[in-house]
Image: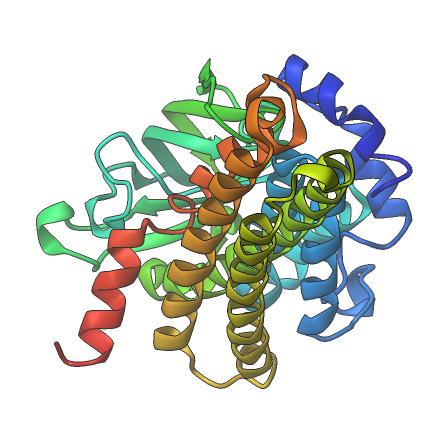
Length: 363
Protein backbone atom coordinates (compact mmCIF):
# COMPACT_ATOMS: atom_id res chain seq x y z
CA UNK A 1 0.00 0.00 0.00
CA UNK A 2 2.66 2.47 1.02
CA UNK A 3 5.16 1.63 -1.73
CA UNK A 4 2.96 0.99 -4.77
CA UNK A 5 -0.30 2.86 -4.18
CA UNK A 6 0.28 5.81 -1.84
CA UNK A 7 2.72 7.61 -4.21
CA UNK A 8 -0.12 7.93 -6.76
CA UNK A 9 -2.80 9.15 -4.34
CA UNK A 10 -2.77 12.78 -5.52
CA UNK A 11 -2.69 11.87 -9.21
CA UNK A 12 -5.60 9.42 -8.98
CA UNK A 13 -7.62 11.82 -6.87
CA UNK A 14 -7.32 14.48 -9.56
CA UNK A 15 -8.08 12.04 -12.37
CA UNK A 16 -11.09 10.63 -10.54
CA UNK A 17 -9.95 7.10 -11.38
CA UNK A 18 -7.18 4.63 -10.64
CA UNK A 19 -5.88 2.06 -13.17
CA UNK A 20 -7.55 -1.34 -13.60
CA UNK A 21 -4.07 -2.76 -13.23
CA UNK A 22 -4.38 -2.26 -9.47
CA UNK A 23 -7.00 -5.03 -9.40
CA UNK A 24 -4.81 -7.37 -11.42
CA UNK A 25 -1.75 -6.61 -9.30
CA UNK A 26 -3.63 -7.26 -6.07
CA UNK A 27 -5.09 -10.42 -7.58
CA UNK A 28 -1.62 -11.71 -8.45
CA UNK A 29 -0.58 -11.14 -4.82
CA UNK A 30 -3.57 -13.12 -3.55
CA UNK A 31 -5.26 -10.14 -1.86
CA UNK A 32 -8.62 -10.33 -3.69
CA UNK A 33 -9.80 -13.68 -2.38
CA UNK A 34 -8.52 -13.93 1.17
CA UNK A 35 -11.62 -15.71 2.49
CA UNK A 36 -12.59 -17.42 -0.79
CA UNK A 37 -12.10 -21.23 -0.73
CA UNK A 38 -8.89 -22.42 -2.32
CA UNK A 39 -10.91 -24.46 -4.85
CA UNK A 40 -11.81 -21.15 -6.49
CA UNK A 41 -8.38 -19.53 -6.37
CA UNK A 42 -8.73 -17.95 -2.95
CA UNK A 43 -6.64 -18.21 0.20
CA UNK A 44 -9.25 -19.98 2.31
CA UNK A 45 -8.53 -17.85 5.37
CA UNK A 46 -10.85 -16.55 8.08
CA UNK A 47 -12.44 -13.12 8.40
CA UNK A 48 -9.49 -11.61 10.27
CA UNK A 49 -7.54 -11.61 7.00
CA UNK A 50 -10.21 -9.35 5.53
CA UNK A 51 -9.92 -7.06 8.57
CA UNK A 52 -6.17 -6.79 8.00
CA UNK A 53 -6.68 -5.98 4.31
CA UNK A 54 -9.28 -3.30 5.07
CA UNK A 55 -7.02 -1.73 7.70
CA UNK A 56 -3.97 -1.68 5.48
CA UNK A 57 -5.88 -0.28 2.50
CA UNK A 58 -6.03 2.96 4.47
CA UNK A 59 -2.26 3.15 4.00
CA UNK A 60 -2.84 3.72 0.30
CA UNK A 61 -3.69 7.26 1.37
CA UNK A 62 -6.75 7.19 -0.84
CA UNK A 63 -10.23 6.35 0.41
CA UNK A 64 -11.50 5.80 -3.11
CA UNK A 65 -9.03 2.99 -3.76
CA UNK A 66 -9.95 1.34 -0.46
CA UNK A 67 -13.66 1.60 -1.20
CA UNK A 68 -13.36 0.18 -4.72
CA UNK A 69 -11.22 -2.77 -3.63
CA UNK A 70 -13.51 -3.71 -0.73
CA UNK A 71 -16.58 -3.58 -3.00
CA UNK A 72 -14.76 -5.94 -5.34
CA UNK A 73 -13.54 -8.35 -2.65
CA UNK A 74 -16.23 -8.41 0.02
CA UNK A 75 -19.46 -6.90 -1.25
CA UNK A 76 -20.22 -7.94 -4.82
CA UNK A 77 -18.63 -11.45 -4.79
CA UNK A 78 -19.51 -12.67 -1.28
CA UNK A 79 -23.09 -13.67 -2.22
CA UNK A 80 -21.57 -15.83 -4.98
CA UNK A 81 -19.49 -17.71 -2.39
CA UNK A 82 -22.54 -18.38 -0.24
CA UNK A 83 -25.38 -18.73 -2.75
CA UNK A 84 -23.76 -19.35 -6.14
CA UNK A 85 -23.77 -22.49 -8.25
CA UNK A 86 -20.57 -24.24 -9.22
CA UNK A 87 -20.75 -22.69 -12.68
CA UNK A 88 -21.31 -19.18 -11.28
CA UNK A 89 -18.27 -19.58 -9.06
CA UNK A 90 -16.16 -20.60 -12.05
CA UNK A 91 -17.49 -17.86 -14.34
CA UNK A 92 -17.56 -14.94 -11.87
CA UNK A 93 -15.83 -15.69 -8.58
CA UNK A 94 -12.57 -17.10 -9.94
CA UNK A 95 -11.84 -14.20 -12.35
CA UNK A 96 -12.81 -11.71 -9.63
CA UNK A 97 -10.23 -13.31 -7.33
CA UNK A 98 -7.61 -13.00 -10.09
CA UNK A 99 -8.61 -9.36 -10.73
CA UNK A 100 -9.34 -10.05 -14.39
CA UNK A 101 -13.07 -9.34 -14.04
CA UNK A 102 -14.09 -6.35 -11.92
CA UNK A 103 -17.27 -6.54 -9.86
CA UNK A 104 -19.84 -4.01 -8.68
CA UNK A 105 -22.90 -4.29 -6.44
CA UNK A 106 -26.20 -2.93 -7.72
CA UNK A 107 -28.67 -2.21 -4.92
CA UNK A 108 -29.27 1.56 -4.65
CA UNK A 109 -31.78 3.16 -7.01
CA UNK A 110 -32.92 6.74 -7.61
CA UNK A 111 -36.04 6.06 -5.51
CA UNK A 112 -34.65 3.30 -3.27
CA UNK A 113 -31.57 4.15 -1.27
CA UNK A 114 -31.51 2.95 2.31
CA UNK A 115 -34.99 1.42 1.84
CA UNK A 116 -34.21 -1.81 -0.02
CA UNK A 117 -37.92 -2.64 -0.12
CA UNK A 118 -38.37 0.26 -2.56
CA UNK A 119 -36.40 -1.42 -5.37
CA UNK A 120 -38.24 -1.01 -8.69
CA UNK A 121 -35.78 -2.54 -11.17
CA UNK A 122 -37.67 -5.59 -12.41
CA UNK A 123 -36.85 -8.93 -14.01
CA UNK A 124 -39.61 -10.85 -15.81
CA UNK A 125 -39.34 -14.31 -17.26
CA UNK A 126 -38.76 -14.62 -20.96
CA UNK A 127 -38.59 -17.63 -23.26
CA UNK A 128 -34.93 -18.34 -22.50
CA UNK A 129 -34.29 -16.59 -19.16
CA UNK A 130 -35.12 -13.17 -17.78
CA UNK A 131 -35.54 -9.61 -19.10
CA UNK A 132 -34.43 -6.79 -16.79
CA UNK A 133 -35.53 -3.16 -16.88
CA UNK A 134 -34.71 -0.39 -14.43
CA UNK A 135 -32.04 1.93 -13.06
CA UNK A 136 -29.33 1.91 -10.40
CA UNK A 137 -27.30 4.77 -8.98
CA UNK A 138 -24.27 5.45 -6.75
CA UNK A 139 -22.72 2.17 -7.94
CA UNK A 140 -19.05 1.93 -6.94
CA UNK A 141 -16.92 0.38 -9.74
CA UNK A 142 -20.00 0.81 -11.94
CA UNK A 143 -18.18 2.53 -14.79
CA UNK A 144 -15.49 -0.11 -15.21
CA UNK A 145 -17.22 -3.25 -13.90
CA UNK A 146 -17.38 -6.44 -15.97
CA UNK A 147 -20.33 -7.80 -14.01
CA UNK A 148 -22.84 -6.60 -11.45
CA UNK A 149 -24.35 -8.50 -8.54
CA UNK A 150 -27.74 -6.87 -8.86
CA UNK A 151 -30.86 -6.78 -6.68
CA UNK A 152 -34.07 -6.69 -8.71
CA UNK A 153 -37.76 -7.34 -8.20
CA UNK A 154 -39.06 -10.60 -9.67
CA UNK A 155 -42.58 -10.33 -8.25
CA UNK A 156 -44.88 -7.86 -6.51
CA UNK A 157 -44.22 -4.15 -6.14
CA UNK A 158 -42.54 -1.81 -3.62
CA UNK A 159 -45.92 -1.68 -1.87
CA UNK A 160 -45.42 -5.37 -1.02
CA UNK A 161 -42.32 -4.55 1.00
CA UNK A 162 -39.39 -6.95 1.10
CA UNK A 163 -41.10 -9.83 -0.71
CA UNK A 164 -40.31 -10.57 -4.33
CA UNK A 165 -36.65 -9.48 -4.50
CA UNK A 166 -33.97 -11.63 -6.13
CA UNK A 167 -30.26 -11.39 -6.95
CA UNK A 168 -28.82 -11.73 -10.45
CA UNK A 169 -25.33 -11.78 -11.92
CA UNK A 170 -25.50 -9.39 -14.87
CA UNK A 171 -22.70 -8.99 -17.42
CA UNK A 172 -22.16 -5.34 -18.22
CA UNK A 173 -21.49 -5.89 -21.93
CA UNK A 174 -25.02 -7.14 -22.62
CA UNK A 175 -27.18 -5.16 -25.06
CA UNK A 176 -29.36 -2.66 -23.21
CA UNK A 177 -26.98 -2.29 -20.23
CA UNK A 178 -25.89 1.35 -20.15
CA UNK A 179 -23.66 3.49 -17.94
CA UNK A 180 -25.68 6.67 -18.28
CA UNK A 181 -23.57 8.90 -16.08
CA UNK A 182 -20.30 8.87 -14.12
CA UNK A 183 -20.96 10.67 -10.84
CA UNK A 184 -18.63 13.36 -9.51
CA UNK A 185 -18.39 13.07 -5.72
CA UNK A 186 -17.25 15.17 -2.77
CA UNK A 187 -15.05 12.39 -1.37
CA UNK A 188 -13.45 9.10 -2.43
CA UNK A 189 -13.07 10.66 -5.83
CA UNK A 190 -10.70 8.07 -7.28
CA UNK A 191 -13.36 5.34 -7.12
CA UNK A 192 -15.57 5.46 -10.19
CA UNK A 193 -19.26 5.73 -9.31
CA UNK A 194 -21.97 5.20 -11.90
CA UNK A 195 -25.59 5.68 -12.72
CA UNK A 196 -26.89 2.67 -14.66
CA UNK A 197 -29.90 2.06 -16.86
CA UNK A 198 -31.08 -1.34 -18.06
CA UNK A 199 -33.44 -1.52 -21.01
CA UNK A 200 -34.67 -4.99 -22.00
CA UNK A 201 -31.46 -6.66 -20.84
CA UNK A 202 -31.76 -10.39 -21.52
CA UNK A 203 -29.98 -12.68 -19.07
CA UNK A 204 -30.06 -16.48 -19.04
CA UNK A 205 -31.79 -18.53 -16.35
CA UNK A 206 -28.39 -19.33 -14.85
CA UNK A 207 -27.92 -15.61 -14.03
CA UNK A 208 -30.26 -15.98 -11.03
CA UNK A 209 -28.10 -16.06 -7.89
CA UNK A 210 -29.61 -18.32 -5.23
CA UNK A 211 -33.34 -18.92 -4.93
CA UNK A 212 -35.90 -16.68 -6.57
CA UNK A 213 -37.59 -14.38 -4.06
CA UNK A 214 -34.84 -14.69 -1.44
CA UNK A 215 -33.05 -11.50 -2.43
CA UNK A 216 -33.96 -9.49 0.64
CA UNK A 217 -32.51 -12.08 3.01
CA UNK A 218 -29.40 -12.32 0.84
CA UNK A 219 -28.99 -8.53 0.79
CA UNK A 220 -29.45 -8.23 4.55
CA UNK A 221 -26.75 -10.85 5.08
CA UNK A 222 -24.39 -9.07 2.67
CA UNK A 223 -25.04 -5.70 4.29
CA UNK A 224 -23.89 -6.97 7.69
CA UNK A 225 -20.42 -7.67 6.30
CA UNK A 226 -20.47 -4.42 4.29
CA UNK A 227 -21.26 -2.33 7.38
CA UNK A 228 -18.64 -4.06 9.46
CA UNK A 229 -15.97 -3.41 6.81
CA UNK A 230 -17.06 0.22 6.59
CA UNK A 231 -16.39 0.43 10.33
CA UNK A 232 -12.98 -1.21 9.92
CA UNK A 233 -12.10 1.29 7.19
CA UNK A 234 -13.37 4.19 9.30
CA UNK A 235 -11.16 3.28 12.25
CA UNK A 236 -8.13 2.60 10.07
CA UNK A 237 -8.53 5.92 8.27
CA UNK A 238 -8.98 7.74 11.56
CA UNK A 239 -5.80 6.10 12.87
CA UNK A 240 -3.78 7.23 9.84
CA UNK A 241 -5.20 10.76 10.13
CA UNK A 242 -4.30 10.79 13.83
CA UNK A 243 -0.72 9.69 13.13
CA UNK A 244 -0.26 12.41 10.52
CA UNK A 245 -1.68 14.98 12.92
CA UNK A 246 0.66 13.90 15.72
CA UNK A 247 3.63 14.39 13.39
CA UNK A 248 2.38 17.84 12.44
CA UNK A 249 1.74 18.90 16.05
CA UNK A 250 5.17 17.69 17.17
CA UNK A 251 6.88 19.66 14.43
CA UNK A 252 4.78 22.70 15.23
CA UNK A 253 5.50 22.43 18.98
CA UNK A 254 9.21 22.18 18.26
CA UNK A 255 9.02 25.47 16.40
CA UNK A 256 6.89 27.18 19.05
CA UNK A 257 8.47 25.72 22.20
CA UNK A 258 9.56 29.09 23.50
CA UNK A 259 6.00 30.39 23.37
CA UNK A 260 4.46 27.29 25.01
CA UNK A 261 0.76 26.60 24.53
CA UNK A 262 1.13 22.96 23.45
CA UNK A 263 -0.80 21.40 26.36
CA UNK A 264 -4.20 22.09 24.80
CA UNK A 265 -3.16 20.43 21.54
CA UNK A 266 -1.78 17.41 23.40
CA UNK A 267 -5.01 16.98 25.33
CA UNK A 268 -7.06 17.17 22.16
CA UNK A 269 -4.87 14.45 20.66
CA UNK A 270 -5.42 12.30 23.75
CA UNK A 271 -9.18 12.60 23.31
CA UNK A 272 -8.86 11.62 19.65
CA UNK A 273 -6.68 8.60 20.46
CA UNK A 274 -9.14 7.44 23.12
CA UNK A 275 -12.11 7.69 20.76
CA UNK A 276 -10.28 5.72 18.06
CA UNK A 277 -9.26 2.98 20.48
CA UNK A 278 -12.82 2.64 21.82
CA UNK A 279 -14.15 2.15 18.29
CA UNK A 280 -11.34 -0.25 17.42
CA UNK A 281 -12.29 -2.49 20.36
CA UNK A 282 -15.93 -2.46 19.27
CA UNK A 283 -14.89 -3.30 15.70
CA UNK A 284 -12.71 -6.20 16.82
CA UNK A 285 -15.48 -7.57 19.03
CA UNK A 286 -17.90 -7.51 16.08
CA UNK A 287 -15.28 -9.04 13.77
CA UNK A 288 -14.83 -11.88 16.24
CA UNK A 289 -18.59 -12.52 16.34
CA UNK A 290 -18.84 -12.40 12.53
CA UNK A 291 -15.87 -14.73 12.20
CA UNK A 292 -17.55 -17.27 14.52
CA UNK A 293 -20.88 -17.01 12.72
CA UNK A 294 -22.63 -15.39 15.69
CA UNK A 295 -25.51 -13.01 14.91
CA UNK A 296 -24.38 -9.46 15.64
CA UNK A 297 -26.96 -7.29 13.89
CA UNK A 298 -27.27 -4.91 16.83
CA UNK A 299 -23.54 -4.72 17.55
CA UNK A 300 -22.59 -4.19 13.89
CA UNK A 301 -25.09 -1.35 13.55
CA UNK A 302 -23.62 0.26 16.69
CA UNK A 303 -20.13 -0.37 15.37
CA UNK A 304 -20.84 1.22 12.00
CA UNK A 305 -22.60 4.22 13.54
CA UNK A 306 -19.90 4.93 16.13
CA UNK A 307 -16.90 4.31 13.88
CA UNK A 308 -18.14 6.37 10.93
CA UNK A 309 -19.03 9.30 13.17
CA UNK A 310 -15.70 9.07 14.99
CA UNK A 311 -13.80 9.00 11.70
CA UNK A 312 -15.38 12.27 10.62
CA UNK A 313 -14.87 13.82 14.06
CA UNK A 314 -11.20 12.83 13.98
CA UNK A 315 -10.84 14.36 10.50
CA UNK A 316 -12.52 17.54 11.72
CA UNK A 317 -10.19 17.78 14.72
CA UNK A 318 -7.17 17.08 12.52
CA UNK A 319 -8.25 19.82 10.13
CA UNK A 320 -8.38 22.24 13.05
CA UNK A 321 -5.02 21.17 14.47
CA UNK A 322 -3.35 21.53 11.08
CA UNK A 323 -4.65 25.10 10.86
CA UNK A 324 -4.28 26.62 7.40
CA UNK A 325 -2.15 23.74 6.06
CA UNK A 326 -4.88 21.15 6.59
CA UNK A 327 -7.47 23.01 4.58
CA UNK A 328 -5.40 23.25 1.41
CA UNK A 329 -6.97 21.41 -1.48
CA UNK A 330 -5.11 18.16 -2.10
CA UNK A 331 -3.65 17.81 1.38
CA UNK A 332 -4.05 14.35 3.00
CA UNK A 333 -6.04 15.87 5.86
CA UNK A 334 -8.44 17.70 3.55
CA UNK A 335 -8.92 14.46 1.59
CA UNK A 336 -9.53 12.47 4.78
CA UNK A 337 -12.15 15.02 5.84
CA UNK A 338 -14.00 14.65 2.53
CA UNK A 339 -13.67 10.85 2.40
CA UNK A 340 -14.94 10.41 5.96
CA UNK A 341 -18.37 11.80 5.10
CA UNK A 342 -19.12 8.97 2.68
CA UNK A 343 -18.56 6.37 5.39
CA UNK A 344 -21.63 7.76 7.16
CA UNK A 345 -23.71 7.05 4.05
CA UNK A 346 -22.38 3.87 2.38
CA UNK A 347 -23.85 0.63 3.68
CA UNK A 348 -26.70 2.49 5.36
CA UNK A 349 -26.80 6.02 6.74
CA UNK A 350 -26.47 6.98 10.40
CA UNK A 351 -30.24 7.19 10.53
CA UNK A 352 -30.63 3.63 9.24
CA UNK A 353 -28.18 2.33 11.84
CA UNK A 354 -30.12 4.14 14.57
CA UNK A 355 -33.36 2.52 13.39
CA UNK A 356 -31.75 -0.94 13.44
CA UNK A 357 -30.43 -0.32 16.93
CA UNK A 358 -33.77 1.02 18.15
CA UNK A 359 -35.70 -1.98 16.81
CA UNK A 360 -33.15 -4.44 18.21
CA UNK A 361 -33.51 -2.80 21.63
CA UNK A 362 -37.30 -2.81 21.44
CA UNK A 363 -37.47 0.98 21.55
